[in-house]
Structure formats: structure tokens, C-alpha cells
Amino acid sequence: MTMTDPSNARPILMFDSGIGGLTVLREARVLMPDRRFVYVADDAAFPYGAWEEPALRAHILELFGKLLDRFSPAISVIACNTASTLVIDALRERFPGHPFVGTVPAIKPAAERTRSGLVSVLATPGTVKRQYTRDLIGKWARKCHVRLVGSDNLAGLAEVYMREGFVDEEAVRAEIAPCFVEHDELRTDIVVLACTHYPFLANRMRKTAPWPVDWLDPAEAIARRALSLLADIEPKNRGEALSEGADLAVFTSKRVDFPTRRLMQGFGLAIS
Image (cartoon, rainbow, N blue to C red; front, side):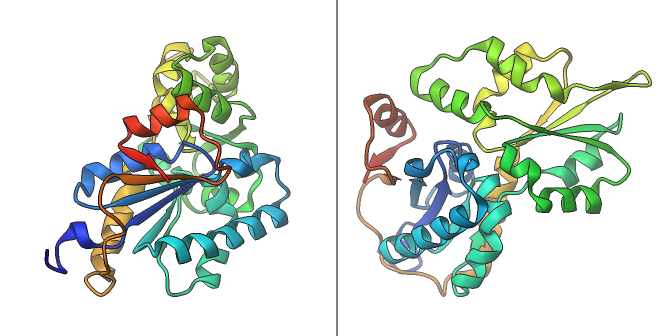
């Protein structure tokens, strides 16, 4: 095997608080089928919304020091809006030699696509309250009416749905209801899914929504950004293969129940 064979590259690390980042992994594999991946779920700290910001920032920085030492990835994708809006700048400062791809609410494309001018951003409470999110609105969506909707429960509902195959549709309906605004005979026409967990529930959201909207999933854009960044840094970041066999899934709690193990196997991930 030559050093220029993509299968011999250092892995791409995908990071999320839970299983939401699998939506990004799914798209990344389409674009980069020869790459190897390490998926890290910081389930010991889930949900991130329950943390105070300084403690969560310190936790993620400490965890990444260990992850980069252990896996030596070519690039790390922070497939989590809450973590990205809080700590992406600090990660780049702490690890200046390592490239990071963040996940931020897709407010710019929403503002470009909306016809009614009524856009909702469906996110975790942490992402909603973050100044980073409000700055994106001020920069890209000043001509739109943007409603920020913080959901306490959708990420957890997505976790249950992916593990157990069932979700309470009325609970989903209640969580998305504030996204739908009517004003002067205009209606919300775009909902930004500003949490990587939420696309797993997209079909249930479509079913329970009061009218059709464009549900904006950023996963493909994140994967394309990772591919673009890799093209810029390789081949100088070539390294030895991590190991033979399947891509890896790492759970920081080190407790993986059977439904989760089955889910990871379905995504072609071996528990590490």
C-alpha cells in the first residue's frame, strides 16, 4: 500500500455530545468513501445544555487533548452546534496545528432561500442563547424575521428514536410548534435544524407540522467543508493507518447498551 492511498490516511474524527453527529458522518461517507472515521460521542456529559458554559468549555478542551493524542486524526469535525458555538475558537487556539470544522446554524442559506422572509431556527437552548447565533442573524439575515426556538427535549427524543425505533409524535409536534409563524398573510417557510440530532426526526417533523416548510439540514455542507479542508492540508498530513477493520465509535461513558451497540453496527462502527 502506498502512502498516497486514501485508506492509509489518518482518520477523520467526528465529535458530538451523543449520536446526532451520525447525520454528518452519513454525508461525509458519501463524499469520502475511502476515508476512515472515528466517531466520538461524549455521552458521559450529555446533554450539553445542562452545563454552565465555562465548565463545558473546559471539559471539551481537556477531552480533546486526550482524543488528539489517542487517535492523531487528520482533521476533527465538531458535529454539534452547541459545542461549536461555544468552544470552536478556543479549540483552534489551544491546538493551533490541528484543523477543526465547526457546525453553526445555517442562517445564511436560510436567508438566501426564504420567500416569505419568516425563518425559524430550531436549536438547543444553549445554541439559542449564544451570542454567536445572534451575530449570524445580524450578519446574514437582517432583512428576515428570524424566530429562535430552543427545544429542551428534541435531542433526547432523537436519541430514543434512533435506539428504540419509536418516538412520541405528539411530543415532537409540541416541540416544533413555536417554529410556525403567520404574519400579514405570510407564513414561516424555512426551519433551520440547528442541532445535528434533529434530522433524524425530520420525517416526524414533516408529518406533525401545521404546513409544509423547507427543513434545512446542514450535514452535507459540513461534510463538504471537511472535504475541502482535507484537500488543502494533504498530502502533508498523511500518516499510518489507525488499524485494520471497521471505523470506530467511542463513548466517553464507556457504557454502551445493546440498542446503541446495534445502532453503531448499523452505521458500520465498531465500539472502541
